[in-house]
Image (cartoon, rainbow, N blue to C red; front, side):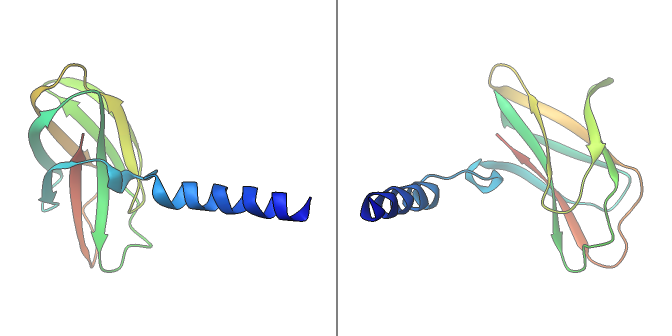
Length: 117
């Protein structure tokens, strides 16, 4: 019985390692450095789309409220930490432009917005 549980556990661990399950598995369509309150991301997206906050440097104290707009319409907004994403349904695959607003600019460190599809 112990060997059966061991094999089952081993299969579970291998399944988690083999199959991608995080945001990195999504294709990055566009990436821009945050230099002002508004950042424009453009790319061919469809279905589940994500806008992610990525950091290079000190990131533990920067967690702004991020709002994603398409045209004048608010798509979604939430408070993000580095490495987190806003996920939404973009509909059919097409080239779209999103405007991303941050509540405040970054402090020391370099931060990026990534558009994933």
